Length: 548
Image 1 (cartoon, rainbow, N blue to C red):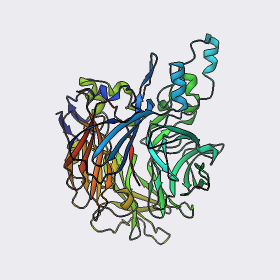
Image 2 (cartoon, rainbow, N blue to C red):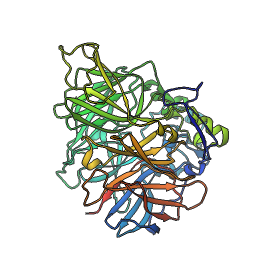
Image 3 (cartoon, rainbow, N blue to C red):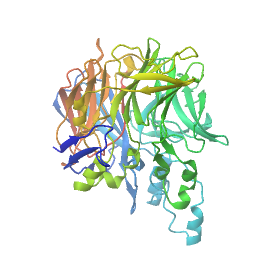
């Protein structure tokens, strides 16, 4: 076990946030693997509950090089989809590479011909010097390497990234079915891989658009039903357009918050320099080089009525922070309560270079210790702020809530957060990849959430957080690295945490030693595991597709 001394999420020790020594090398967690397109059996240890019927789907990078060229960033690896099929206490496994245009082109040429987030495509070696030079002035095309998540629109599964392309896939076979371009339906240049879905199937998302008037953030609504069996995103509409504070340098965002009546967009000071992105191919620099942290800028919460599309003129400000994943948000007693995983520094996105993930010894410790930890926080936004609202006074009147919201100008409220954890979370490196009982408690008051502890560059523990008691339960074993925990409710559930947690666990110290872990969500005790004789790289997000 690594020796850990934690200074706190916002306290620098020199240029370090923590003092962890002796981190084990995890290079084998970010290496290329072969796909397993036909189902294979697993060895069951313990017991997999017989009531679980469906497929646990996972997405993430699975191939990190073509020919003698390697990708630079963790986000660049080619999408590999995984399926753990669970029926009657038994589990089978299969995986397939997404047959995206990027994957097919790279494979055909045996080199990187499509640029990714941190990697610029390699010029054709068959061209002469002048032709290769001119090719740098070609417009950089967005990738369709949808390696981030599985998402659902109108009942169909797609795999998604953050460009304008998604792929419809068959969740039963993992076959790639259809490439879908957001730009053919609405005027956006991309969309997040983390949409929110209403109980009736209506889905909300966000995407940027770049115009002569500058960059805009768009709230997107996709209807629940198809009019024709072949429909994909037909009927999608932009509900609201929010102008970027800096027209040429919009904020990067990975997700957003939603309540019953509102969408909250978090304009954080992780900025994208559009000019550098457009000229990146000329200089041989990936998009990641144009993404930077600007701590001189405050964070702004924009609140939009998702039914009317009206943008609240009141802007809720907070200190500079970065967030990739929101936990939950809900309305109660005139307040919008928003919980999210936050860091006081936004440089981490550029630290996840593959060369960093493959380091060892003191070099690995240095990468980890210079990255700010991520912790769960709550902001409370008063929804009624008008000319009669007093200045300089805390408007948060919720009982036992240390978060503040102070009106400091006509349309400006400054907010501070409440920590949703005790000091013991520091020992586990903070928390990321948060999940809840989404079907029953998204946009509603809730008590529990789940996530990965990050006492390494990837998750090395599973955590259950109790908001009422500010306590947590932990599943952790040395040299085992669990994926994002996904909650599956039991069929006779009466309480919020009646169900199981599913997570894929991998290790760098033994070959072909992956397993699907099943925890009792209430007790956080292991019920069983399904051992798979394959190697799987550490991935991003997943979903459970219940059988009907």
